[in-house]
Amino acid sequence: MDQLFALLASLDWSPLFISLKTGIAATVISFFLGIFVAARVLHAGPKLRAVADGLLTLPMILPPTVAGFFLLLVFSLRRPFGSFLYNSFDIRVVQSWLGCVLAATVIAFPLMYRNARAAFEQIDMNLIYAARTLGMSETLIFWRIVLPAAGPGVASGTILSFARALGEYGATSMLAGNIPGKTGTISQKIAMVIQDGDYLTAGIWVVIIVIISFIIILLMNLLSGRKKHDVHHW
Image (cartoon, rainbow, N blue to C red; front, side, top):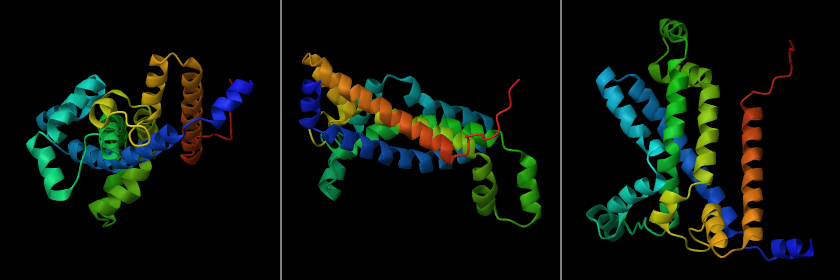
């Protein structure tokens, strides 16, 4: 027990802060982008919808290292676009925290998109027709009618996106690397200490990320009104 307390006292907490801020940033981007894209795809034609849906869902099916490979092809300083960003705007994606956010967003986005689209598809169209007869604009209908009605599905997508971004490893390792204090996330820290045979430190980080994930899910469920006060037994 003394060894455990001594280890906690000497623990470098930077992976926790990097993972949290990466997860939050990736979730915010996935939230707004996922809702926007889901609404646009829903109004597209059947053929275009099928192609767009396949492309947007692809990162969820592919191994994260494959997504990381494609990101490297685009944002590497040896590639035209990556070189352009760095030389023109001083934006470096590879081996930077921005790379962590980008990789986590690419991997987490499909979860937000799929949940948002499924929630939009289940909305009662009579609500939208009624709002139109009242003279509401399409923008106002979306924010006042569609989004609140799709709230549970959007909340689920947000939770899943954050959990996925928080634990992202493969694409992040390839694009951002594992730089302590800069791009070293909890997942990378766990993999590194296990390779060194330090299972105690790995276990501590595993417990930390499990607790964080459980707390976030619990809070999101409470905020989204999923907690039912009236429980009916049968």
